[in-house]
Amino acid sequence: MVMTPDAEGSTLQLRDVRKSFPDPGDPVNRRLVLSGIAVSLAAGELVSLIGPSGCGKSTLLRLIAGLETPDSGELLIGSEAIRRPSAERGLVFQDPNLFPWLTVRRNIEVGLVARGLLQEKKTEVDEFMRLVELEAFANAFPHHLSGGMAQRVALARALINHPKVLLLDEPLGALDAFTRMRMQDEVLRLWSARRSTTLLVTHDIDEAIYMSDRIIIMTPRPGRIDQIILVHLGRPRHRSNPEFLQLRGEILELLHFAGGERMKSGKAHAPIM
Amino acid sequence: MIVRNGDEATAVISPPKPPPVSVAASLRTLSIFAGSVALALVVHLIVARNEPPLEMRFYTIFLGSVLLIAVITAPAQILWARLRQFRQNLHPILTAAAFLLCLWEIITSGVRLLPLPYFPSPAKVLHSLITDRMLLFDSTWHSLLLLLSGYALGVIAGLITGLCIGWSPPVRYWGMPLLKVVGPIPATAWIPLAMVVSPSTMFSAVALIALAVWFPVTMLTASGISNTRASYLDVARTLGAGRGYLIFRVAVPAALPNIFIGLFMGLGASFLTLVVAETVGVKSGLGWYVSWAQGWAEYGKVFAALVIMAGFFSTIMTVLFKVRDRMLVWQKGVIKW
Image (cartoon, rainbow over all chains, first blue to last red; front, side, top):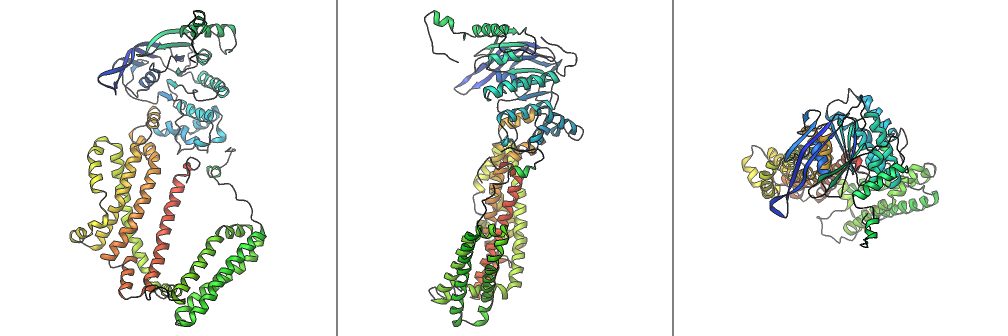
């Protein structure tokens, strides 16, 4: 766990959070999506959330963003309860969701315009354009950007609000392998510069180990926290370091994706992943 | 497309330059055009011998000047590449227009295939157009005033109701059925009622045009607003956007392509309603002019007014297209126009 005194982030506490949705196929019972979610993130910590699809990872992020309200339980930023969406909790989706009618620069300015701070913080826009290396594309419209560039704009747009908590919902999921690894470094660079408390949803175990301080592994239907793994590697990390690979093996074992067992016991399956 | 530092946004969407046109190819097409105009002139001079010379004068001058321009620009385009490009693009259509005028004259004044006086020759139409220009200009001006006031009123009302219905579920619940039942009634069907109820025909004409515009604008605005991608709204909320921002800076721009479809549909409906209102009630404007000229059996003037209408309505349509191109510049490259 990394703690820095100058972190912009704030602690995030989830206490016994439970969430269900109406089931379209069953008018009586609701479908339970998350149950008994309890975890605390320290200020400036980067935590990954992995688990099979349908385990409520995205719902959990939407709860923290304030876009959904829990059935029960508490979500706290510092000592304040989360009630509605706010600029202090930035959210970046797998689809960059840039506004196609705004240029790159105007997209990055959205948070400032929405809060009426554009005049005051005009210089900060330039700073963020530089930070994500997109000055050359200031006046381009989003459909001219590649997937990686668009996602950098989305990151800059979220970061310009100096969020206390940054929620990343598989932001690199749609990128090709090389762009993805470059973007992992990019996100780490931005994170270490600002130290927003960051919760990263991912499907990629390597990405989780490479980036995070801790990894939360979830089980599906309803989503519960299965294990929390402390990544005790120093930074910057190396993807082929023996310790890295050992941790990777352990996590694969936990998720039953290691492969060897099934082969040995004679119940060979086609690989799932 | 790669955008380099300092390029304006407009540079990003500039279309690829067409290949340069060779002088020889351009000369060939130019001579075809000049030839077709010359043909029209010769046909006209032959046909005009049987017609009153005073009415033929303007058309002779017109064809003569076009021929002159065609002949002058032929050598000029050798030196001026842009003129060459321009003429090359317009050539087939201009040549076809010259042939069509020629054909029109042969059918009407030439062999008198169509009954007179209902189908006058182009020479006669041009004559009416020029001799009656003051009244035509005045009529066009009145039509413009009526159209713009009705259209503006309808658009404003349509945007407001469309926004309310599209954004607010309760307004949608009550408003949508009303809209679906009342909206499709053609505005012109209200004319008998409007004549009785309203204080002046001018007032009722404005109201009718506004009504005709209001329906499509409301419908398309409402559907555009309510179909705003939920994730755009979610993103804006997490960036600190309040309700005003969500409506006017997210939902409205997202709905703008739809809104413009409504504006175009409304414009078409407003033309129709304008002409009908002017024909049956209002005592000015191009619609009134057509029925008045028809009453005097002056079909040259009827056609002159139709020519003016074609130019008038298509100009307004073009203006709306230009506005859309400016406001939806971000769509270039996203969709096919």
